[in-house]
Amino acid sequence: MNILLVFAHPEPRSLNGALRDIAVKELEAQGHEVRVSDLYAMHWKSEIDRADFPALAPDERLKVWRASTEGFAAKTLTEDVRAEQEKLLWADVLILQFPLWWFTMPAILKGWVERVYASGFAYGVGEHSDKRWGDRYGEGKLAGKRAMLIVTAGGWEEHYSARGINGPIDDLLFPINHGILYYPGYDVLPPFVVYKVDRLDEAGFETVAEHLRERMRTLATTAPIPYRRQNGGDYLIPSMQLRPDLGDPEATGFAVHLKDASTAG
Ligand code: FAD
Image (cartoon, rainbow, N blue to C red; front, side, top):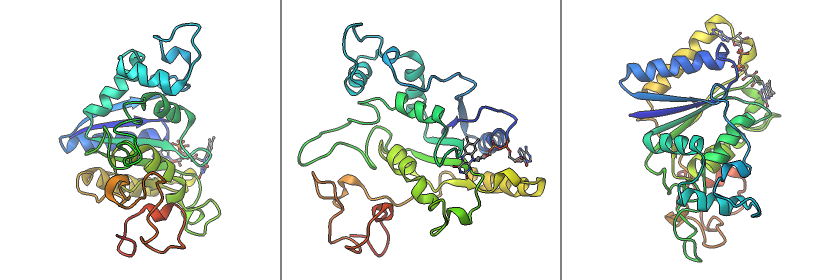
């Protein structure tokens, strides 16, 4: 398979750098072709601004959605953005790797998403009407591909458990897994999360490394998170609410978007 790993850590000699090297080595040993977008090393520009839309007339008001739609369609987006879009189309699997910073991804990676995920490419795809709300959440340009996160966190696993003070890790990562990866069509694999990393010793590192190698060996066979498909009949269109007859009518929160035995329609 072709695999793109987008790496967001400023220090190659970090724990993240070591885990990236382990992941890449294992993937290559399995015969996969791997490309790495090392965002800090690339001096990735993280903010969207006028410079992203060279075709925009100097006196024209910047409306990002419109400029993005037109720029993507006319292939006038900047070279760095187009190169990343091509990598995404090339890759069968996308891996985003980052340290958890303030409960989410580092700003440089968020900026990669904002700039690379152009309108017409990752959103604004397909028919938008009262009957169909575009190709997204399980459908879209990146459908049929797989994606997963590799995340390191300073907090303990218990701190991210169902009643942990930081909030459940699946909830914290939901905007990335569901909102950024599932949205343009990826099948999203469960994340690889390493906790309490600031106190990791050599033995702990070896355990983590072996677990990561195993995840890299099973990329093609690991079952994706069973998110409900937008256009699979589970949602009312155009209100986009889960049908009231699915699952517990009192249930709310991110987990209602998971299809499981008790809520499957
Ligand atoms: P490093 O600092 O490089 O390494 C961590 C430890 O791993 C080292 O001390 C060492 O013991 C070990 N190690 C590193 N490399 C190796 C190796 N090659 N072999 C063996 N052992 C090794 N945490 C949270 O949980 N939630 C947050 O919201 C959060 N927000 C943060 C915000 C900021 C701005 C910062 C700076 C940190 C935050 N943290 C948070 C903590 C952060 O998630 C961790 O510091 C980060 O994940 C550590 O990853 P690293 O690659 O930087 O580790």
